[in-house]
Amino acid sequence: MSTGQIYWGSVPFVVMQLAMVGTVIAFPGMVLASLESGPKIDPSKIQIELPQLAPEQSPQIQFK
Image (cartoon, rainbow, N blue to C red; front, side, top):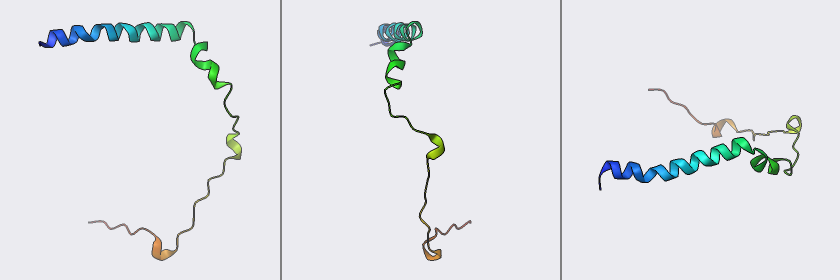
């Protein structure tokens, strides 16, 4: 099997990808419709709590 045959075998997949990108550009509602039904999260109410490490548990970094 030659390299040219491999490249020509990939042409249909590239064409399908281009067709799908064109479809998404033409009809963005197909992929954006599900975003409205997700949970509503307020980023200002997010709290990240990290446990306090005892001094003997802290990672030791050594430089050489």
